[in-house]
Length: 194
Ligand code: TYD
Image 1 (cartoon, protein in one colour):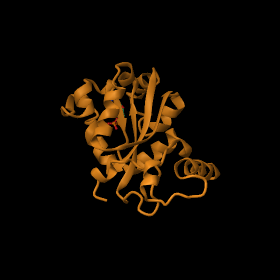
Image 2: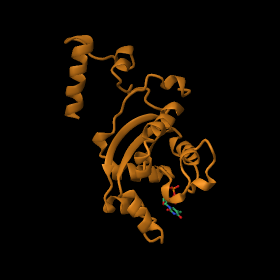
Image 3: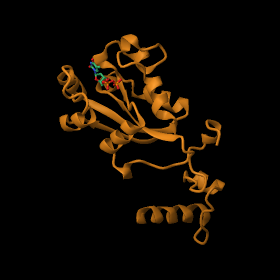
Image 4: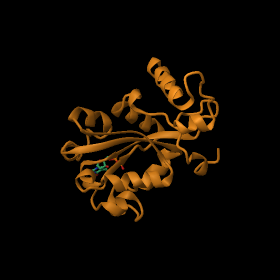
């Protein structure tokens, strides 16, 4: 909180001079990328957890996958690259650890770097699942990420949370609050009604 105030003071100083403060909601605040607290995002705005799996990173698909979410109008609020531990993976896939295919999933998911992201936007949980496509790429429609970039369920390139509750759990598991950024995207009014 204190850090946020200091940050605001520094921004104020550079944008407006030492004796003025930001009138939130004005161009100056928007220019600084600060969220307008009085209007804020509408209630339907959600956050979800998206990850490019090790095959997607190895195959150089990170940029194309990020581009799909940007192009759709979603906003990136957190991103990091990491090598996933067995412990983190078992928490992430807590409903799958007893499945016969889990040892394969574990070997694959811990084999190389993963790009972990949090994306924000209206109804993003449902929409991102549609964009990602069926779990088994053989059944994924063309135009979906899995339908365009993958062939087999064991190498399906990308993860997207499957429910709002799941998204909240996964975001908390993979990210600290301080690593997620609240910022106003300048084209928001061109992708949403309010
Ligand atoms: P799941 O959560 O059911 O699917 P999704 O990723 O679409 O939410 O499964 C998690 C991952 O486990 C899936 O992306 C790939 C792997 N998996 C297999 O390797 N074999 C399988 O038979 C299934 C169902 C999943």
